[in-house]
Image (cartoon, rainbow, N blue to C red):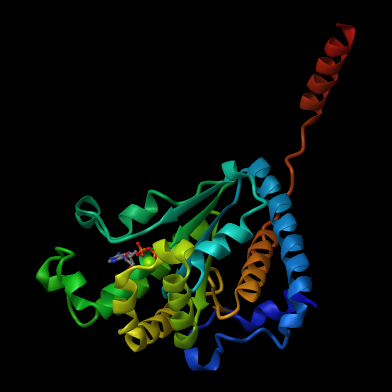
Length: 293
Ligand code: ATP
Ligand code: MG
């Protein structure tokens, strides 16, 4: 099974002709569930590669990597992040979850709170939801926009196009500074969401994951799908691509995400820093000194 070959199927760099209906949430690239054990091995392999690359990323201290996760509820953002990053040194990774903005956050432009959490060089940053909520939940619920305290004259019918433009410019700026940006939309079907909600209701250990608000948002399913489609159409780019990852089968979602992260790191010219001749001489001297003890 060549997982790296299939990635291009899910990667969107040019959104102009992107349509969600062309992407099947249950797609497993023809791999049957009988291949699940093999998928587990492949995932372990991807996780190991990721950990090795992250070690070099940190040592080299030049590049950074931002991973953005967006999805409907129960699509598996948390589980994917947990599994894919399981082998990585926790000191090199920060995970940030963005919820309904606080009063202080609403006092600023919407990129303020996420900008403070951007990964630095040598680091991987993960956004569990992100500034993309500003063209998703805020678009689906216009009353949220009304509460953002923007000057009235700035809220026009162009606001979504303007937000796409600003987000694109922001991502261009950060990538030009050496922070790579990779975005994941975990694409879940409405049917599978129902199944997972019922599981949360029926399994006592999963009850805590259920929130009544999730059922409410489900009523806006079509509006969300429309908002996601337009978001991808306008913000997919070669430097900050979207991966539209089939999310009905968790084992497959994780495999694709792990491979995409490995790929993003491989695209950087990662190498351990080498030491200069003077530094080598100093190392030899240190060795002599230790051996003399
Ligand atoms: P989980 O349900 O797995 O704990 P979650 O990401 O769904 O994770 P919740 O606390 O359930 O977390 O939901 C966070 C909510 O905050 C979402 O409904 C999201 O749409 C909302 N949110 C995030 N950013 C914004 C924003 N900028 N404006 C308004 N709402 C936002
Ligand atoms: Mg939730």
